[in-house]
Structure formats: C-alpha cells, structure tokens
Image (tube, rainbow, N blue to C red; front, side, top):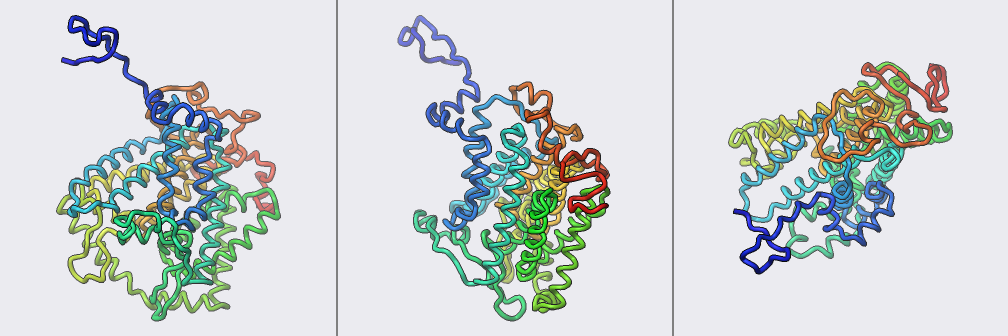
Length: 507
C-alpha cells in the first residue's frame, strides 16, 4: 500500500493526505537549476554552450581541458532540453544509439579492475555528451541554433587545427604548463590516463622513419586525433569558405588549404590520407553543383600535394612512411585478438580495452580504432547497434540542402576512420553535430526519409517542421539543395547559380 505524506492531515491517523501530482520534467529541471540561474540562462542565446565550447577550444586545450570540455558544455545544453517543453524529432537510428548506451552501462559489470575505471567513465561521459549535443541541435529552430553559425564554428575549428599542426611542425617538443593538472586531486592527477588527457603538447615525437620526428597533435591529445579532426572538419571549411560568394574569402581558402598540407604530410597519418581521399572521391562522384565543387577541390588538393611531394622534402617523408610500415603487422595482430577476446563475452563485451597477453610493448587490445573499442567494450550486439545508428544517419543525410550534403560527407569520413582512429572525444562530437545538423536541414527541406519523436510537448513550428526565419526561408535553403543522386534541386544563394559554380566560373 502506498503511503502519502503531507497535507493538513499530517499526524492524524484517521485522515489520509491527498496524493501530490507527479512533477513534470520541466518542473524537475527548474528545481534543479534554480529560478535565478534559469532566468540568467534564458537571457543567453540558445547556442552559447556550443559557441563557447568550440570557439574557445584553443583556450580550453591550453588550460589542459581540451579532452574534458565537451561533457562540461553538454550540461547547460541538457538543462535547456529538460526545462523546455518541445517535441524533438530525431532520425530513426537514434533508437539504436540509445540501446547502444544501455549496453555501455551493462558492460560495467564486465570490468576486471577494482580501481576507479577512469577510461570507462570518460567514454560514457562523452557518449552522453554527444547525445545531448545531437538532441539540442535536432530540437532547436534555425533561429535558435543557426546552421550557418555551426558551420562557421566548425570551419574555424579546422583553421585552429591547421594552426596547431604548424605548432607541431615548428616546435615538436613544445608544450604548455597544465593548470588543470595542478588543481586536480593527487589521486586523479597521478593516474596515467588522466595525465595524457590534461597535458597540452604540440606534437608526439616518434621514430617511425628511423629517426625522431614530431607528428602534430595540437590542440588534441594524440596525433591521430589531429588527423581525424582535420578530415572531419574540412567539409565545413569547404561549405563556409570555398562555397562563399566572396571571391577574397575563396582565395584565402585555397591559400589555407595549401598551408595545411605540410602538417598533413608531416603527421604521417595514413588514416587521414585514406579517409580524406575516399570522401573526396565519393563527393566528386556525385552529380550537380556541389559535386563539381568537390571535383575542383579534389583536383586542387591532388595537384598541390603532388607538387609538394616532388619538389619539397615532404616527398622524403611520404617515401619513408611507405617503406617503414611497421604498424600494419601490429594492427593486424590486435584486430584478430580483438575478435578472439570478444568471444569471451559476446553479448555485453568486456567493458573496455584489455592488455595484450603477449609482448608488453604492444598496445591494449581495442585501442586501435573506434570500431575495435566498441567491439571489445560492448560485444557484438553493441557493435551492431553502433553501426546501425551510424549507417542510418548516413542514409538520412543522403539528400537535402548543401549543408546536409557536406554533413553526409563528414559521416562517410567518420565511417572510414572508425577502423583506425579512436574518435573520442572531439571527433565523435563533430560526427554527432554533423548528423544532427544534416538531418535537421533535410527534414525542414522535406527530404528526410524517416524520423521518430522522443519526447512530449509540441510547438506549432516543430509540429509543421517549419523554421522561423525572415522571409520564410531557412539558412539551409539559401545554401542550395541536393537530391538523393547528388543533383542540384534548388539554388537561391546570390553567390551561386545553376550555370556558375561557387568560383564564378561556368560549369
């Protein structure tokens, strides 16, 4: 029998106090945040957590917070979702992602170590953070979290990545004293995993070629993180700069592309080279104006790259990387071992990567890429759910305005990268932002093939799928539209015409 407390009958055994109504999620969120804090947050633009997180990323990295900052800014985004009553329309693959999160939680029971599992907590925190960023963008109108603002932020993030790459090239032994490491409790700061996360360094020095070489990693944790971010952010740079109506901006874009190729080659990141090549060829194989832009960009990158290889010392690095392929054998060994140990717990996985039982200099099994981390951590079922969500989002973004097209390319790049790169934290957030942004633009353009609702509450705008912008036109409309085959359907950007590409030349 349920017992209710409170009311005027408290203390009177002959009376039963009336049951209190169950508080709504909105009331619960308001009580957690507090009225004063809630009012102050309402005065800020809805996109401020995303803007401060991405635009301020160089500062967070210099403070030692670069790998930790994403979940921090997911908190105000999440609170805004809780305190607002609005229907959230998400792509159908989001259900598979939620099931995957359930398997991540279940995998905790398979962890062997009795110590505090920093790596497991960090992965879960970033998964939840990605989810919040995804929902926040899907739930927002375009005047609340504008597509063009997000595109500019991510294009700027690519430029920051290029600058960080040059820091690694010019000052491979450089680093910045970590304020975060100083203020962390000793029990946390001495953890080897946490030390890697909070120490801002410009490069990782490796002797892959037989001599020490600084491979750029700023402003990220590992050089592979740098390579992953470079490729994933490049489509947003194309959209914001190469597709600009301003000819000066487009000219600067090509100069920045040329400058960026030096750290790309010095990084010796074959995963970067492969994923970028696959994505550019895929984009160029489509039809329409955007595909023509992709073909021009691909031709420019290949031409400049070949010139650098032939006429600069970069050619020596590329040749040396091809001749010193030591990592491939190790990776093949670890891939086979990942499948083997996952059979020990195929349903919920092992909770996280495991030490290799043989040679101690070989990295942990499950650390050679997101695919392998998911496989070892959550088993075959978790891997299936993870891939189902990703592939569905690729399908959902196959048609739509040009922002959707380039977000679709980002997802293709990420699908290649999961085999070789551990994409947590920054790269995975970029992928989720791209998936949400691309789906939202396609849905409001009437080209999304399927969606589901994940919460109650509805506004007229969200019910109709319309966006409140001046003139009844969304920013994504102004960027042009691509059909399922890549064909241009609608182009209304004054800097773009059906017969002239973004460079102003007849196509």
